[in-house]
Image 1 (cartoon, rainbow, N blue to C red):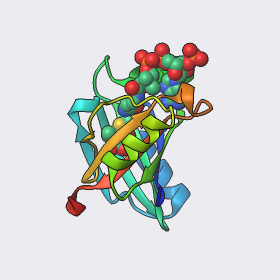
Image 2 (image 1 turned 135 degrees about the vertical axis):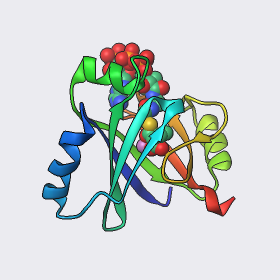
Image 3 (image 1 turned 90 degrees about the horizontal axis):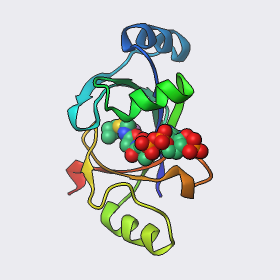
Length: 135
Ligand SMILES: CC[C@H](C(=O)O)C(=O)SCCNC(=O)CCNC(=O)[C@H](O)C(C)(C)COP(=O)(O)OP(=O)(O)OC[C@H]1O[C@@H](n2cnc3c(N)ncnc32)[C@H](O)[C@@H]1OP(=O)(O)O
Ligand SMILES: [Co+2]
């Protein structure tokens, strides 16, 4: 794991949360992006070496919908930047971690991603990210 790539925060409404985080972080949102396959709209803020990713649900079946219903707005996941996501997935699986997707899948911000089940990581949803341009 190279570094924390981003911290994901589930929010009810990006229109409300983007200005709030621009005030909080004293920086502007550099990108909003819809990831239809995940049922999310995302908004990114660069904070030094890492980023904040705000996540809003776009459909009832979105993981964010379920999370918000259950826990309300708040920290959703920690994403780590990895050199070789397939090698890292193999390594983690051999270490007994539960992968939530068999193959790397399309993420936001030009990444390939994989998630680990929080049950195997002390209750924290973990995301692996590999920059697509490095493929
Ligand atoms: C990819 C685009 C973007 C990017 O960065 O590029 C994103 O980050 S998209 C983020 C949204 N996508 C995902 O979160 C995909 C991975 N998540 C899942 O597959 C599910 O959300 C899963 C499996 C974590 C939970 O789904 P499930 O249907 O099992 O929901 P439950 O509410 O029944 O949860 C089971 C159990 O897990 C706990 N839980 C759920 N979400 C989280 C979380 N974010 N952090 C910690 N724990 C979580 C939940 O509380 C349940 O525990 P229990 O003790 O039984 O209450
Ligand atoms: Co993420």
